[in-house]
Length: 409
Image (cartoon, rainbow, N blue to C red; front, side, top):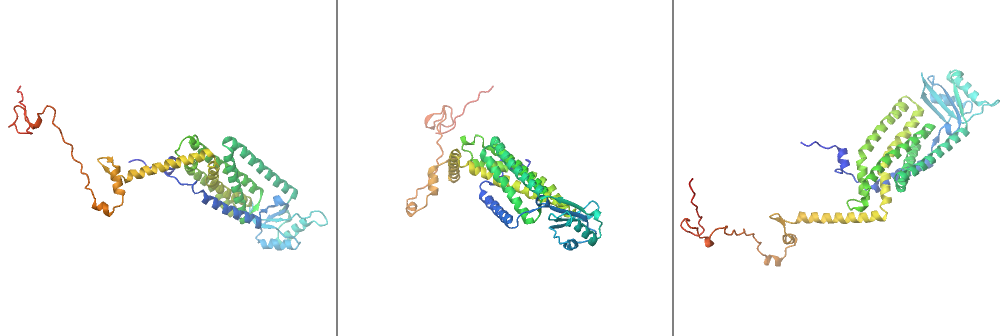
């Protein structure tokens, strides 16, 4: 019994295939909807930058069995409104992390000292256990500018590399896929209400690299399948690209699952169970971006390349040749299936008779079908005409078999 081939093998050999390229309008519509939702979210809800970008003061102190409302009430007594109050997991016990706007620290209006004294009084903790960190707005703006500059340099480097490695149309499709991933990640991040921290920027840069890697792998297979395709008429550029996507599909799925599982562990265990805030920002952006990158490399980047390449005159002619050949093969297959056979040979007359509609005149003038007559067997070499027996035959009857005397040894 022959061993059954795996799904990956059948996809690679083209025995099983899904038409990703032919249904690209569906993927465009789904991505367009997600991007529209992301844009609306960014315009209405907006991103929430952390204190590292907008500047301010951060107070961290032991929880000491108090609630977040107790912290808010204590700060209200010194006319300070906290922007963020959250509980994070410390080394030995849970701790409060409170973010405020940048507060004055110079006398006689040293608001930071007033906050420390009020927290110590209302929550019963020592001032020495309160850690204060001040982040200037200038430092946050510098971080933002450097992040934007790094993104621009990265995109330019990607365009140059892909233009030399493949061609500019593939580079353009890859950049559109990257922007697609960034926009969707930022939109979902805005909907979640998470803060944009330096960890988020690191995750976004990681997303760009992963998405580009997955796209390059698919593009390399597309180029391999389309080398010299213009000179034939076997398949169009879109069909060859669709074969490449199917051939790399299992690899893309396996890579994405392996990458998403540890990231999901960071988000669920690190942020959910352990309460690590920095892991939460990093893991959410990675989780969304990795999923979007795997999606765009299959459903966005490759279909965009096909749309750009099919506009070229050479590939338009190739598509016409392939369509003509497929039409010819279909007609030949239909004729072969419909034509009856007699003795292993097809008759065009019988095919026309079988397919033509019957009329009254046809019934009246019906002709008896021709019955094949068995071929007449002529006399064997050496026999006498008229069926006469040879000399020494039996009775000399016509057609009688002649006998020969056997010599006895």
